Length: 198
Image 1 (cartoon, rainbow, N blue to C red):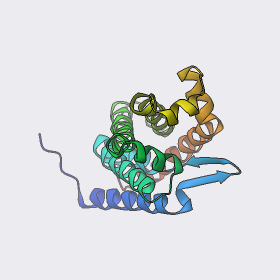
Image 2: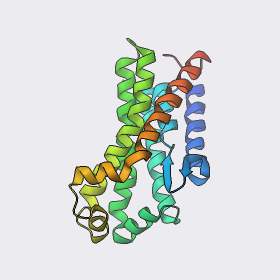
Image 3: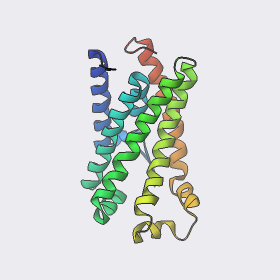
Image 4: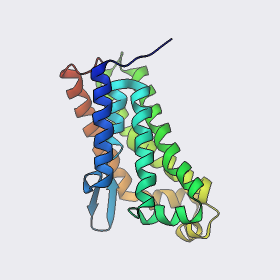
């Protein structure tokens, strides 16, 4: 069964991917409050999942992953730069795979729930885009780099679950709140503008 995108869907996918690239290379993608830094780059992925389903989520998730990797290569992420110096291949997997999996997962959630309960599904997609981004990235960090001296120094002898919770802390809560509200609101606006179907 072939699945082809309509021209307006291709345009929307291109716009969301472009927005994601813009957010990744400017302060638009990150909100810095004192020492805290929260990413908002999962929001276009959630919107693409609502607009275009699993395909939209997967494509923008890939873009998110690639921009994360290149940001670390260019020194935009101190932690990423350190992990690249340990293993560029493992860091590419860490930057790319969690974002791809997050995108396709929220697209599948939208596909499964949108016909029965579109409004709650929009909020759920927004929440899950931030939640899965955090959980998959941190899980990948522990799995791929957990034995390294760098990550062991971050863990500091804590339980791994406690390390993840304390490491992401307030940032993750802020990201989940922003993504839940913005993805739901913008997803509804796109539907009302007849850019996509439910």
